[in-house]
Every structure is written in structure tokens, then in C-alpha cells.
Length: 283
Image 1 (cartoon, rainbow, N blue to C red):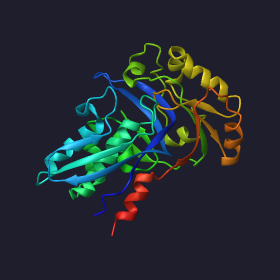
Image 2: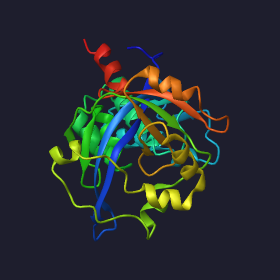
Image 3: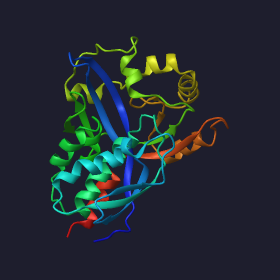
């Protein structure tokens, strides 16, 4: 069993995000379209029989017990027969609070990888149910296929959006998801639509107006990039993406990017890099 693999934890984009209402328990009903991109964190796992989970390097201002990687590993412990442990190393490339799902993706990759190393034999459906405890985005990363998500994000339906090229811009700010959903200015009354309607309608993000209003850094980035291509917020975080039909067109605009803008060229993927790795491991 290979223990030197670099397991990808890809970022996602919310190609659209609509908030349909707020439930009595405080959670929000939504409709969103998830697509992966080829920008990833990478995790390596060295399984052992120590019954301990270690994570390196330490993430500043984050206790290990609060790390979603650690929490994911501990959620699998009840399914182990022996004293299963692991030393986990993370190569962190995705920004925290960026709306790219980095923490959820790290957790999903941990569930999938330790299921493999600890030989637990759990299905993706079971791993998704376990991961939902950690966050509504975890199941999409476990399944690894582009999808429309509904409910609080746990109901997934297959989708095949165009695998466009993107410029991904990262403003210099951190935005917490709870702060967005608590914002009184958040749009919460977008009518639910059929999947067919969702896929043909011009795509927007209901979180964008209030995020732009509270964070001038995000508004500045959107105003800069929207001159060149359709540009909007992804998820509830700070990151912004512009859509291009070819890598060449994305590169042209990337070369014009102002010095103050942190921006990457990336590619949309309907099958996640984690899924791609798993197919190579199956006998």
C-alpha cells in the first residue's frame, strides 16, 4: 500500500449560489453549482499503530483539535478495529476564508485516504454522511463530481458544466461563512428553480452584494476584472473568478493584471483530482 502519495484536496468554485430561505433551525436553504479546479492542497499520510493523529506543519492560530483534518480522522476512529494512527503532512496552497472550500476539501481527502490506508471499506455515501458533520461542503469533495447542491448543501445531483478556464483572484482579506449568513443585507428569498432553469439562466451569487458592501478589497477586485470577462464571487468567501473559453484568452488578461492583484490561471474540472487518483489505486 503506497504511503508516499500526495493526495490532492482540490478547490471548488460555486458557479452560481442562490439562497432560497432560512429554516427554523437557522440554516439556509440554497441551490449552488459546484465545479472543481486544478488548484489543490496536498496531503501525505503515514499510517501507524500509535492510535495518535499528528498534523504537520502547525497552522498558525489553529489548535490541532480544531483542524478539520484532525476532526475527520477522529470521526473514522470508531470504524477501526485496531489502534489506528497516522502522521499527516499538509502542503497548504488554498487560502483560508477564500470561499474555495479548502478546509472541507482537506477533511474529505482525509476521510478518503484514511479509509484506504486503514482498509475500512466504507462507501463514498457513508464517508459523505460522516463528513457532513464537519460541513455542508464535505460531501461534494468526497463524491468528487461536479454537482448541483440543494438543501443546506447535502443533496447532490450530477451536473456537467463547461470546463472553462478561469482567472482566480485572491483579495487580501478573510471572510467567515457565519458572518455572511448573519448579514441582514444577505439576499435570502431567491425562488427555487428547476435544474434545467438553473443551467441556462445567467449565473450570479446571492452573497456577492453584501460581501462587496462589507469588504472593499473584494469590490475592487471584481470591478477590475469584470472589464475583461464575466466575474463574480465564489461561495461565501473572498475569492473572485473570471470565466474564459480558452487558456489563451485567460493568459492575455493575466498578463495585464495590475501588480496589486494576486491572481492565478486555473481550469475547471468536473471530475476531481482526488477521484482521478483513486481510479489509479483500484486493482
